[in-house]
Image (tube, rainbow, N blue to C red; front, side, top):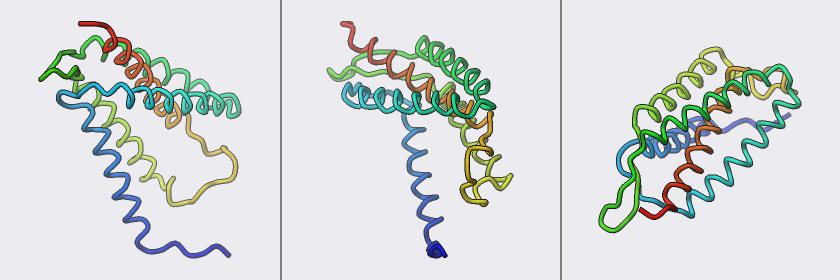
Length: 164
């Protein structure tokens, strides 16, 4: 018999997710200083996640089409966002100002999908064996967010490395 879950664990998890989401939202608003190491780490992590999502699409065929559409949408949206990102130097530090509407819309979409899944009871049933419960919409959204982040990070890295 598994050990009972501590009663405070859901509160800690909610606070942790809230903090991570706040950090994610903060990157979409206002001037951001250029941090090349952090961008390279972000690119490496997103490449790893994209490879894992590609493997998921290969092994769970009913989600592959949704993930492909999501990946294409995320890539296109990232190109559009890069076109609307301002690059400048402040106090001798290079930086950029992303378009807040694009990042904000993606963030709201993520929260809306999580809320929908929570409303349907997806998180109260525990982990189901296998991937039979994998939703093409959820994994398509994940692919869109990962591809958006990857293309955005690569585009920022390439643009910020160019001399002004």
